[in-house]
Length: 241
Ligand SMILES: Nc1ncnc2c1ncn2[C@@H]1O[C@@H]2COP(=O)(O)O[C@H]2[C@H]1O
Image (cartoon, rainbow, N blue to C red; front, top):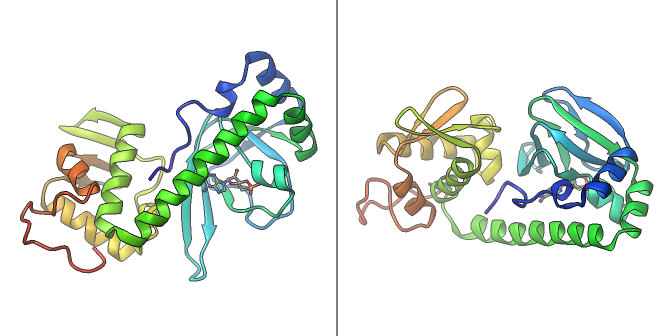
């Protein structure tokens, strides 16, 4: 499962001349931390090419909570679905920190793609990656414990946003810790319980906005469902964890 996009973002994969043309089609915008850049179900159709900062893609749930679908950063485009299919916005996109972007109207973005088959192919690849990731996510939700899903998320965040320090891998989370629950489709209580298990076994250490992974090999095994907290095969996870 993956919160992040492809290694090579849309803007970076475009030839430099095309990248300049696309950015010249739009207007620069700066979003403050927490500002909604795109609102779920809106009928707007602009595309945002992200220049810097992190944004979070999420949907509201029936229970009034939110489910985090993805994190998007510099070089990526968001808002492509409405621009392509002219439907309402499929999700909200919110700035995590300050985000700098260029907003290109849906019409201009479609014209840009129509004139450049390789750019259209990149968008198709992005959609394919997203669909694959959504399939993996559905399987995880249907079959994995909260502990396993949390471990997998932490491994991913460590690989993509981790740095070696403090005797482990420090995750300077682009995501506040309390959003971890929203990122694995679990309740906060279940995530707090899973984190406690990981802490008790010295697999992670947690502080305000950071998580330090102390034992990556065990975290990876937990993510793969090949280890149990405490390492005792008889030590079954309680239901929901
Ligand atoms: N599962 C997802 N993964 C990554 N990005 C998404 C996902 N779902 C929606 N988005 C992005 O969020 C945007 C919301 O507005 P759009 O539907 O126009 O386009 C959407 C995509 O760019």
